[in-house]
Amino acid sequence: GFTSIVTNLASLENKGFEIELNSRILPASSPLQWEVSLNAAKVKTTITKLPENGTPRNRIGGVLVWDTNTGSYEWKGGLQEGGRLGDLYTYHKIGVFGSDAEAAAGPVDQIVPGASKKKYGGDVNWEDVDKNGIIDTRDQVYMGNTYPEWTGGMSTTVAYKGFSLYARLDFLTGTTIMNIPEQFFYTQASGLNNLSANVLKSWMKPGDEKTSPFPRFYYADQQVSLNYVRGNSDNFESGNFMNLREVTLSYTLPKNLIKRAKISNMRVYLTGNNLKYFTRYSGLNPEQGGGDNGRYPMPGNFLLGANVNF
Image 1 (tube, one colour):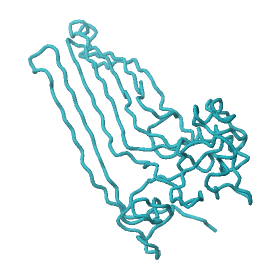
Image 2 (cartoon, helix red, strand yellow):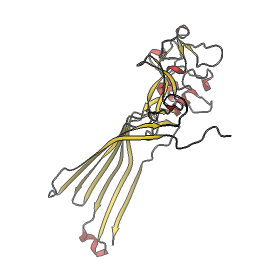
Image 3 (cartoon, rainbow, N blue to C red):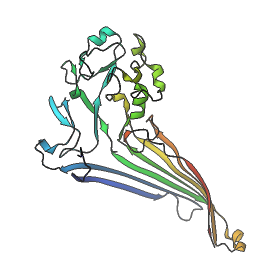
Image 4 (cartoon, one colour):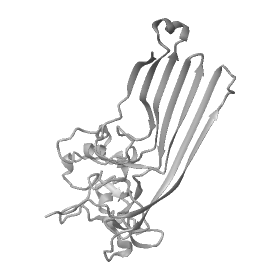
């Protein structure tokens, strides 16, 4: 009665390297102290073994697409021996048809349901990758991978006469995110969502395709799979980011001020966490990569506190 189960299926090999550099910028005798730490890591994961199933490289899932390098149809993505996890494929939007006549002269779009495959001005012009005059599942192209190529960060501490300023940044590069909320907001795929502001830039008349990349708007995408619901390269965005993860300003009180209260050490501090993302991702949270189904943003917060030793 089960259509699928979750199990430990594959054998994986992880190879990579990690670099860490720590430096004291000023000599220990200096009243002003400054320390800097840098780290970065790169890991490549390869699927080494899958259960025998009679397919080449024991492939599970994936998509059959035209490979311009080999000039033939090849299975990409999914799980296959020698491959990797997380490859993303979808249809590549190369533009918007400017008129009904231009749409009629374009490739026959087999993804459009029903007997008539007619398209209109304002509909997306998909790339016909294999140049056969037909848009079908084999015309999907590589969009990226859900897992990062590089991760790392930097921290620095500056201290002077009881005052200390600590800051830490994290970064991640090489990941791709599918912005599913933007896709559904634009298409009204369920008919009940809020609207994306990009609807205001959608195609309405011939010539609009020259100034805006957004196709015409269908409520609940009544022409199913015409523009965004099937998956659109516009919705695959870079998940690269750098985050100002923490900044802490602290002060350790002089012992002659606190000894009367029988306190041996007292440090007060103000900490801010998740203060700023530097990213081009248009969604709320670039941290996880993969498909963004409407994840919550990482909350920023401030802490005021004291460490007291009696």
